[in-house]
Length: 128
Image 1 (cartoon, rainbow, N blue to C red):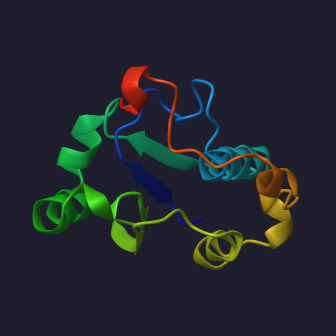
Image 2: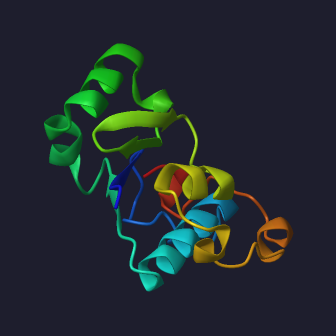
Image 3: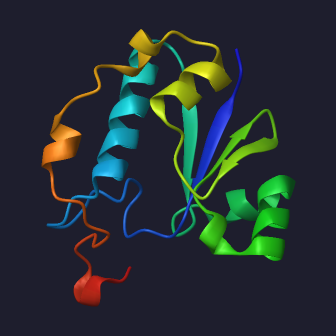
């Protein structure tokens, strides 16, 4: 089975789902990862705030940050190779990159379209 890692920008908590504002993309990615875990597929998710050494120890991600900066995060890595930067994988990306059926990702819930999109995680002054 392929191993995926997601390297995320600094957030106030490990999922970015803290506070009053809900970023629907972070909610979607957390839901997808939970669905994958229920199907026996583990994805490592690293937040720059909580796991900075993972960024330092991963040569590809470290090189990305040194050359292009944190604006390229989130970054998805498969078997040590960066496959997506600047966004989270789509449902189709997950299925294709991990060679799994879309059904492993859970339902594409309309909730994501209803919730208000916000980059504020609830920290004072909107920054973590």
